[in-house]
Length: 158
Image 1 (tube, helix red, strand yellow):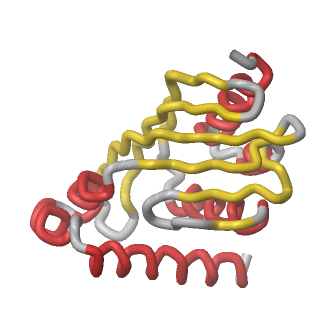
Image 2 (cartoon, helix red, strand yellow):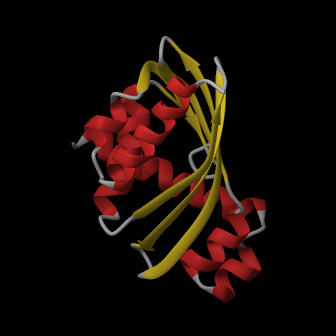
């Protein structure tokens, strides 16, 4: 266990829970990459932090709880829970997420989140839509496209 890297993960999620994007940003390497089932691959601190700022700007009621933090010299992992209201539907979401990290120079250079997209879509969009369409590649592509368009608009007009 690398206590310094484990503390970095905890610092990131503590800042996330406070919606403190400046403190979150200080945890990331300038060349950080991020991926998850929705945003897939984002490169560079500006784009990754743009995503977090956009999401937190839309979800000020977010609750973040992290557990099972472990870290070695170059990589680490954690499990975290996000609780928030999905803006488009007003539905409550409780998303269970497994995060993987790589570290370089005492900062996070790679952050990957994994969660059950179908389960998320049922919570965020409601049972009929999420249940019937949440598993289809076309539906996932639609959600990803909307998310990326929102991010591009957010980054262009801060």
